[in-house]
Image (cartoon, rainbow, N blue to C red):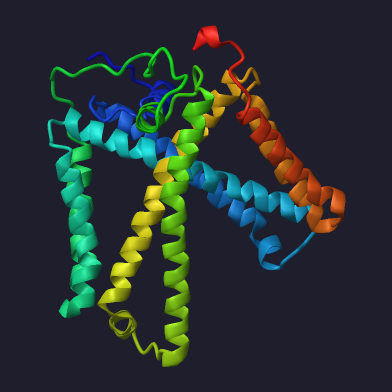
Length: 327
């Protein structure tokens, strides 16, 4: 399978093939993407360093609020990388002729560390198992590509028509086109995707909230924990608390899997309704700008603007396709 090398081709491939779990990605492609993520992290670090004093001082000026919004942008960007990063890692494993299922095994090994430590085996498993899993993963990721026959990812990974698509087909299309900003997605495709997201996020969100409430109530009833040392703190949490943390991480990771697919299906739905998708970006920018203004000048009009923008977006997303013949 012929693959383009280079920074920008790797980034384009990273997003466009977000739904490709069957192909391969070369070593160069993987590490170019890794470099890009490092650069985003550096930008985030610089922004935090610059805006840290204003944030810590609790300034409520327009400038401070705008800086806080800028700090959040790299963090938000990283939140959209979970789904394409998973598929990229799986393709890199396959490219090195290593079963992608080994990646799941390594994740389980890493998670077993804190579970074993909480069960009374001391802090050693907490550090050793994740380190071993990370080292094995790193070795696999730096292995050279191996020649093999693979099915190429389609140039347009979507069916010719999504009008009247059912729930199952919509969910499949949502993830298959998880990084595809081209083409369109019908109204039914979008709203079935919204329903799927709600079915995932509402129950898990309630679980997180209720679990946190129960934990805080339990800690308050038991009294303050005396943290003599790290081992004492960890053991005082108990095995159940560690499992709860693991579940929380799994839930947050599952939510991140939805971020990019939902962004791209929204982008395509705007285009399907005959509205430039860049209006979606404009709405986001204006909402954040208004929020920054509210920090120094609170009034009813500014409060209503974000609500109005949300209503406008809902109306756009509910519009019928501009040209049914194109679906």
